[in-house]
Length: 214
Image (cartoon, rainbow, N blue to C red; front, side, top):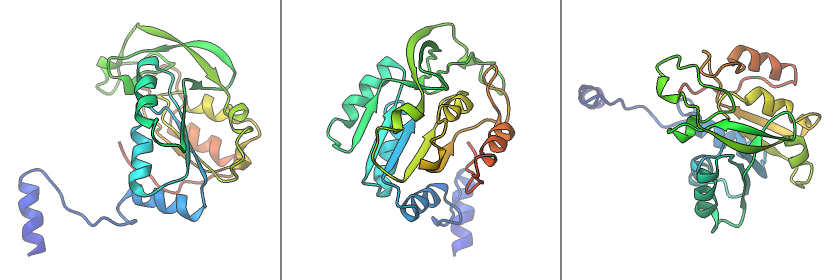
């Protein structure tokens, strides 16, 4: 019966699989957050709050600090989180220095980047010359003010992952786990790709726990 149901769904373009930590990246993530007793999640590249909402749906009830540099998306993020007393939002980009810079603003807001899109891998619609001024902050300066002991860092910053990580300086000992969206091909000019990021983090005594392809 189970095989017949699978075949039926497959015919219509769907697959059925068990929802368990062996197959689900999101379940592995929330289990890790629970096991590490995480009391602060830093959400770098928050857009309008999708990641934080996923954490709340999965049962995480403690503190979230989100960073979103795009002004329009930040205003939506602020409105979306105003009733959550443990979710704080900031209109910053994350990088390796405190400075003022510019971000390329794409029509698809989630792919806006400090780096210019290459148009590779069927992403020609990411390319834009429209820019917005942004304030860039180092994570080390931001988290030193936070009293929480066990921090989970999520970075989805469209090519700026290496710079954001370097902005941690000597604060890596406070980061118990890191979640990154990293590319294997150059989608932005000058971005650090998957092998470089893995090598960098191995030098900080991190190792791969889970991979979810996008």
